[in-house]
Image: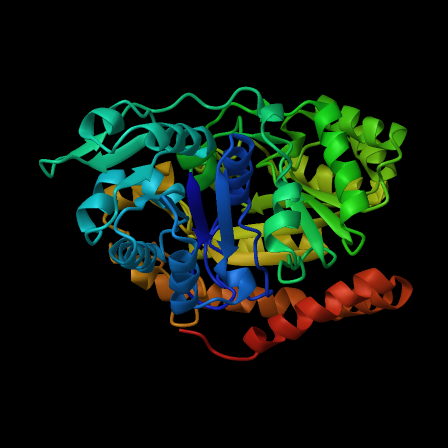
Length: 490
């Protein structure tokens, strides 16, 4: 089949595949990674795919519609996110109107969480939505549609989708089992090379630029109440690629992306299996595949010896969700870690030579004005290389969302209001004792107090002078961030 896959247009620099979709103050723009994996799997199974990333390519809706009409696909696949869902559905419906013979399906965390709501509220022209991990679902659907006409019987037999049948009834099929052999998926970096061409638009504030992003496994064994991807997309079993397969992708990126300055491993928690993380580092060293520095999402509890080996393999940075400086709140959100472990981790990371990007979240269950202050002081004490401060974003499909909804504290069911006119994050939760506006203002204050510390500015100045690559990263991130530090945002 001819299949058109798109990360659709919405707002400039809108990161739909971020864990909290929106426009980031740091200038961050995520790769459309999950869509790219599905593109590779469709191509591996013999389908012709046209893949566009509208935010990265700076395409508007008219541009995307024109490209689709020129391609004349048999199937249209669109990514989605909660704040952009109405826009996403409207564009897919417009494409269906222009190409009536194409089968349309929307994928992503939002439609996985609320498939019936999506189909109920969507305009005519949305044939189906995919639930949870969608690579194999799209392949089976394409294979079947290539040989059979669309029918209720056909759609009823496809695991992992929801659709509106010929009588108008919304049908939600059984879940599809998760892919167990992740080595069967093509390298996502090969898909980037073929379809995206230019990797310069993609930027993480904590990473050297340009970078390449992929995963070594899917699923997270932890059960943090707020984390949307394990709860709606990939599940809680950590399914892992073989170390040999990962090393080969490192080699591919080293060879095919000479401009890349960093590799980001976007597993929810690479160090959930510290023995494997150490073994991967040793394998990269043995294969001499360490030319490009790399970073990874990490728990704040990995041991020093493992860190030391990872640093030797050119691991440059850990991205860590510290979230709160109050132990009761960490327990409430099922973080399964302690303040003391996190402090030790931070010291060990410094000792091992690995930088840390710290994430701090406000407004979780049990939050008070006192715990807000505790977390701000905690962030200053930890002294991560970079830090982000954000109000709780409780998305449909998560335990946190269900809790806040039961309390009556979800700000709005109108998803357009979950970001502001610029696409910046807004809290989705407003506790009567700790309002939405207070959380936003406190996050503004945290950024100012953290980034304007004289000791921090001095540290970054020395880092920029002594390390050219870090200096370029610091300047790029700072130029974006400074726009938000000295203005009031309601």
